[in-house]
Length: 163
Image (cartoon, rainbow, N blue to C red; front, top):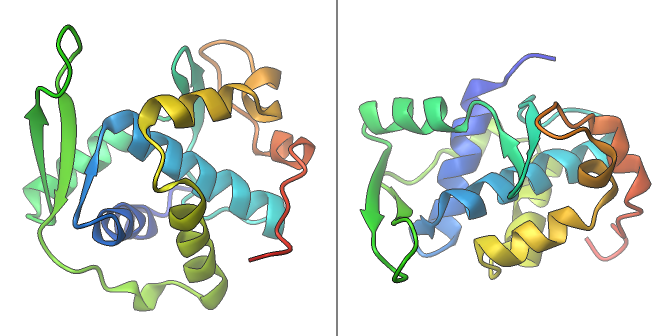
């Protein structure tokens, strides 16, 4: 499995664009990417971004996320600011899009999946998404700090009928 870097970056930009031009929280971004990749794999048996996810205490985490977003900042596609939103917590990373994403690279089924993820999960915060992922087979079935196998997505029983 190879990382589809361009699709990965465009998916991040698309999520930000659709969520009022900015996305609050690294945890939320990580979980939206997880749902994009695992829902897509469950439905089509194909990889969307090709990212590897590790089972960490706060849920599935994409191993290339920080390097990818840092590259996007360098390319002036994305701006990341830290914002103190909650007393006693680490500052929230706010991802702000600097240009409208060119979505022509996405197939119809990929675009539908991106929109599905935004509709189904975009209104949730990082903690709510963390709790959701903790109750799913891929997270439960993986070993701590190890890669989460995509094949475990087949044990979730996701309902794609209304998509």
